[in-house]
Amino acid sequence: MRLNRQDGGGRQCISVTNNEVAADEQVALRKVGHRPGDPEWEKIGICDYITKPRLRAAITGKTPEGEDIDGDYKFTDEFPMAEGFEENAEFFTLTYETPVAVHHNLAFQRVAPLLWMRAGAEGSRIDGPPEQGWAVADTYGLLIDLDRSAEFCDAVDAREGLRIAYIVTDDDGRFQSVARRLPDSVEPIRLYESYLSNFRFSMGR
Image (tube, rainbow, N blue to C red; front, side, top):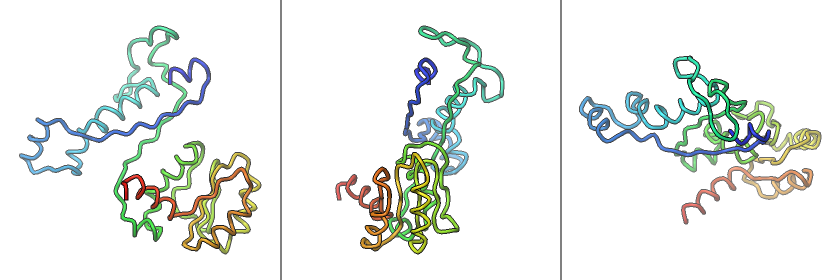
């Protein structure tokens, strides 16, 4: 964030962490019947209790209590921490989704952030299956009703800066038919075959 402030850059960062609870706190929580996943357990994990508040504080320049942060950033560009940064952050919880649920489009809301990040993590995001059968965001599009593919391709062609078109189908022939109609600058990705295959490969299966 400081480098972006110094040179007007647009650097991004993806940080992945668990929500581990300290060993002594785990013992105390278990004694009163709490287990991982319980709100009482998760709220004191390192991610929810430390990482998220610190990132929010750095960006806003405010403490969790809403007060200005004391002190200054030093060295190359000195400025008050209370100024914060012209940045933003999104927090997601990584969950396990069964291949069946993903394949049948029953886990879309939990998969949606991955599609957005794959397309560059910029601009608007498609958070749910579109009612009209397709949708186009700032950097990617999603087609779930192939009978509306002509409308979708027209919308993709009219949108500048689009990088990816996600096409939901089990039929490779229909996928290829839609893919051929897309601009050369737009990468077609078949869902959920590509999504599931990527995870199988990463697990060595």
